[in-house]
Image (cartoon, rainbow, N blue to C red; front, top):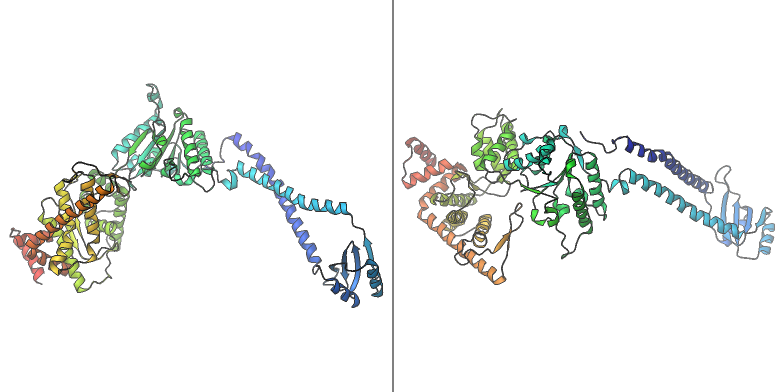
Length: 638
């Protein structure tokens, strides 16, 4: 249930009577101003045509007998004309006297205008009237703005609630999420379950002298379930849950963010025990570094957050959770014990975790007997929870699209490909020559992998273009979950990445742009082997780079001099050339297998890993079941 911030106990409701009682006064003043404006507008309308004319024009009107009345006021003449725009409305004009008043009187008498009189100017009254007309609107405007700002302050901050916290308040019924809905993060759940138990049973902890951690920082890549874990904590604890993003504090006005932090903690203290969750806390928690210029608004917001985290009593059950995927940029003062006491790592799930996540997302999806979630989990190494949820949903959509009542393993595998490389582009027709080049390129990757002992097995080869730019690809599926890679395995990866370019050069005696991504990935691995993994004979165990944005793109930054960086480039080129030569050697020695498998792939466009290995074993003289080999041979001959 969303909590209305005006639904507080009676003392606060009584305080709100003041602004409500002043509302009629404010409306009355506004009405008076509107009436004054309308009266002024009406007067100007009734005097329509009034304005200043030249004295010569006044003389002409006088001689033409169009003047009815003249009022002489100092050097100004107020002239009433005989012409009328409508009944009861006099037309008046003004002019400046340009001759002697005696001559003017004679001129009026000759023209038959007897209605004229002289009004002596009252200088004091004119000055007083000018002052009143200038000061009264300013005072009235100041009074109205003062009342308006005071009312805004009481109802949510200056300028319509700019300084008011934007936190969304939930309770357990609205979040509807518990730890049962979170899978694949057992260690993170265990850390947070202790916090929930403290909120439920604080006595058994305080009896021994333990205190509730003031805050817990959830750290991990995007999509791993940090926000979901925070909501699960609130759902399990059955306490109010204030949720907002770090960017909600920041505005263009300096001081607004600090005001919102104060307001958030005041509301949380009123509703304690409760949980405050700040997503993307790095938006306000970046390190206060003045080397490249500071940000006053962000730093004031951070200072206020630090002060508030020091200022509340943990015994009241107030817990702060925050999530980020950039912990390295956070201010050290925010990470010290006493503020965020715990750092909970929410990393990419392992094989067991991916299987659990797939089961959670598939529990409401109809699955047929062919579904093997463990096989899908093996094929999605490195995927996070949001990726897996998307894959299950895409598989369900594919099943409906194909007119089936349940999701099959084929649907799930296709969904994995849709998420990783995009949908098939069946309308893109490659030329005969391009199909041949793409086919040899992809078979080059697959064949090099099959010829190396330390490579991952091939699951699928296709030359059907995909929406993410791939004209074809080879899908590898590991036999088991791995957390470490040996030097030989990394070298095998390099040879595998460069196998496509090697096949192009061997068969067509030229190369294409199709290997751009392969070269990029191979260069990244080779550079990491030399600068981070200590796998270079020249540099040995020397660390030459440090990781940046560990949970985002995993980029590394060189930590060495320019001359060393040049030597690193030479080592990378040397390692890549060695791998490329190895790829060309393997393919040249197995040219027959390369040609036959490429021809088969051109005909079928997509082949499975089993079909690929059957052809390869047959060419290498490895015995296979006779019927299956005959079927594959028949397809090739056709």
